[in-house]
Image: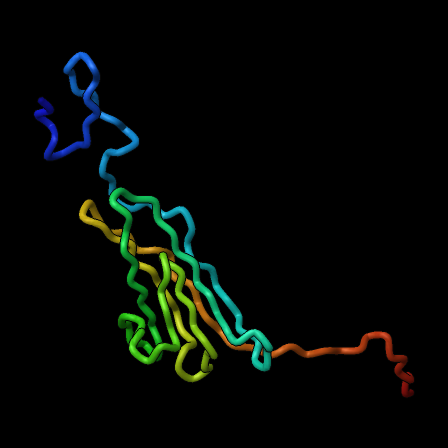
Length: 140
């Protein structure tokens, strides 16, 4: 019989002794991928922004995203359907410069612990094309 069954998963060998399987030990989250700063180009044909957050943990972690916008921090509002979280990846559809710019942070958690990611900023900008090959006359 395995006396450590409430704390660890055990493997029972044919000769009746229990062995702890280190690959199945519960563990709190540890980041594998953290979010990075992103600039969304206004006028882009791609109408999505992604922030990635991935943690290794047993059992698998759940993810919550936070945003600081206009000096207010709160949980990312998923209720309107323009933002979704799938396995730690935050997707923002048709990002708005007035509503979505800010600093984002991911919380990964399971029954063994919680961990917060680094902050990642979402900024908005536009592409400017300059023709450096055009000849200019020098004025005296």
